[in-house]
Length: 298
Image (tube, rainbow, N blue to C red; front, side, top):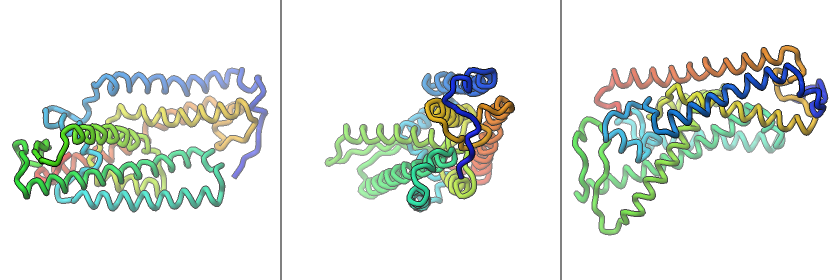
């Protein structure tokens, strides 16, 4: 549904006023803070929210198995794979149907941006789960042949690096494969932490995956959520600076005298939205570790 054009957005006077200045402050201040948070806690390697207290935990993260490993040992990775493939198929079919029916203009809306991001998330998750199932099957086959060695504390569910010798295997290829999986897992985890702004069927599918996987949601990663929304607003501003179009959401219209208030409220809304989802994920990890200490493997 297209809204009416309230003002000529290509006119210089539309942008050179106090309302736009305040809106720009509400927009770019969180973006700058988010970038600083990423630089300090992520790029510098200081993100310790996952409590990596042992070398085994570090090895586990390097192998990227959090992206495909279920939260409980009793849940086979194949079930997480089936769930992700089903969700991806449903989302992709829905997205294609929407594009066919309504055209590419649907990507003018923020909801379609997040819907597409969630579709990509489940697509990447399916690939990582396939890799995880292959890896588990390989470890299992090595176990039956007795050609592998594992670390200690295997019965406690701790991560055990695979140190096997197989005549047909190439150590360099194995190393490259694990490194690629770790990098893909990092991107996958970032998408998981950006898709907290879901609704309806999106929220159901995302919460279902969150209940099964081992991914965490440290609060500092709200920066990714902020950058995602900021990218959409900057995209809208850029388009409207060159083409006079209707705004997809009335509160984005900078000609309104209440625009600064709307932008401030929308910026502040990110905190409770992310906090609620982070609370749900954190509560899941807390309860599972308390109720199933021998089975919990996150």
